[in-house]
Length: 309
Image 1 (spheres, rainbow, N blue to C red):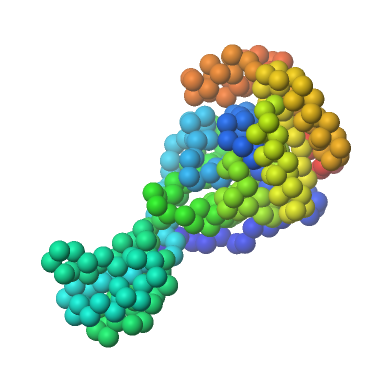
Image 2 (image 1 turned 45 degrees about the vertical axis):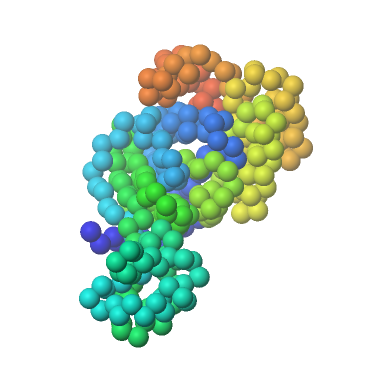
């Protein structure tokens, strides 16, 4: 189906309208999606966006029922018409990406995973045998959950324009929030500081950064916070699995305080949370009020610190 492209993302400027908050981590496995899933159950009047299209997993904890699916097309690849091809070999000679394949029978074709869509083969072909077609790069879904609408997607194997797909998902989420007068777009970002994460943080209002007391996580925490501050985001820090290394947990807190960043919560390594994950549940569904309050304070402290009424 043809997709309707929503308006450009709008960054809230403190006028009481919709705001976009992203949960990121820098390092995979810190518990970022666990925190997002907990917030999904606690935050009202919001829409959810899973901005990790390489390994989308927020859907595992939110019980989605897909109501709309569309093919996501991005970029172009060359196609050779065998009826017009005269086997002059000019396309193969000029291709700098080794995307032109010749089989044992002398038939020319294009490896769509190697093709960069530069159109040189189309330019040099004297027979007009080369055409450009849009590439099916993945699937975008709109799903109903008990906690609000969820926009999520899956990038096809071999496709690398994940940032553009994330941007499109965010546009869909922001458009839905605006049309339905929602207060928040809650985004579950991808790990790392690459293309997907940059697309996740660009133009949002704030970032909740989830880390853990390990050396690699601290290193990646500093990198992703630097990225978030570069885009002038309001940043808060969550220390997950705080008790696995108390010394490094204190180091994270000291560093956050030195950067004037609020530490929103220190979450213990609780076997009940692990069991909830195995059962595809969020920590809120454990039913422990003290644990629920811990996750609730992440949101309330972040909002009260940066967006006081």
